[in-house]
View: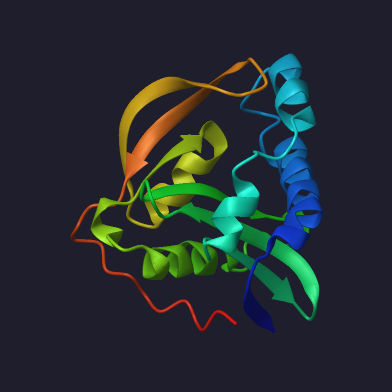
Length: 164
C-alpha cells in the first residue's frame, strides 16, 4: 500500500541515499561516468532543511519502506526533486509524488523544473512541456545537461491521495 507522508529534515539522510542510488542506476545511460560520479557524490543541498520545514517535501512509503520522495521549492514554484527507488519503479509512485507537489503549489499552472535527461519522458508523460535544453551549473562544479520544463495551465492535477 502506497502512503504519502510529509518529509522532515530528519529524513534527509535516507532521502539523499535514495537519490544517490537512483542517480547511479537510472542516469547511467544518459551521462558520462565522470559527471555521474561527481554528481552522485555531492552532498544534499543546504536549502533542503528549510524547504522541508516549510512543508515542501513528501516521501512515498510502500508497506513502511521508503520508495521515493519529492521536493517543491514553493517560493520559486520549482519542482526540485522527484526520485523513486528503482525497486519501486513502474508502480505510479513518481506520478503520485508529482501530483502531490502540484496540489501543494500555490500556482500549479506556473510550475517548472530542470529535468535530468533520463527524466524528460516521465515529465512529458505527466503533461509537462519541454522548453530549452541547457546546462545546469551544479554546486559540485559540474555542468549537467538538462531540459527546462513547465506545466501548461491546461494540465489538470489528478488527486494524489492525502499526505499525512
